[in-house]
Image (tube, rainbow, N blue to C red):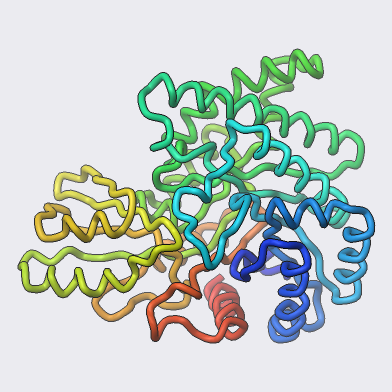
Length: 401
């Protein structure tokens, strides 16, 4: 649906299912009811998550044609994909495997290329389309500067191939598509400084050389192609976890000519660390209810001197809580955006409000996507009826825009 100059939706990675049949069934079960409550007389946009397995099926002409027919009949359209999780994402251990295969591999390249071919067919005329993706790889898989450098360079060459594909699609169809890199804690790219350095030191020089050889573009032309088609997915939860302020990030990217392709509206957990041990023990018990086994819940702590300390996962952080010198923790756990606190812990909802206020005055992208995918693993009392929760989240965004 179109809201204050933005296409607003929720990400269907909230629904379990890896095959196209399961994916389509979820769309048929949920989308009409949600649309009826939020966008009854206007088209409803879908933020589609299609796994590798589902994308192989959806790319078949008959399947794609049937889906397009269903979209038309239900007054819906697809404007963005979540292309981050390649394989299983629900009811199994995901953790760091969410990055597999990463951007160093031909599998990630082929999957993303296939998604773009599907999106090029689905996207309505006059609308840009984007696909969010992994921040190159999970940094802890590449130990040492040399291995990390190799992973970045391999990833960049694959991104350049995607940029070429999207450039040629635009030349042929006029449709503007972009790959939206999604920084997150412990990704190779996890904050704005790393994104800017990556564009300057890798994407632009390596990508420009590739596009010059393949398409004969000048350095200036190649840089424009890369910045038009390789953008950033600003996940509010992720940037909040690394203690970055939305306005600072938006201004930094704008000054470098780095575009945001999509904003994922999401909230992290926020915890003030008590000084006395009794309250810390109580906090350990509370946080243990969030330390589930499906997803990675990276933790970043803020020390009194402003230095940040990172933990790979919440259980590791909990073990060190009694001795911690940090004042506040931010935890990568996509909690409902319409709640600001959970008793003695709270969320980074304020960051979402700051984003909505900023983009209400200065537009930074066309796509907004609510991404709360953890309903099945939330502690008892927070996990609500799914359709009602989706509607409530989107309504909250509308009311605060």
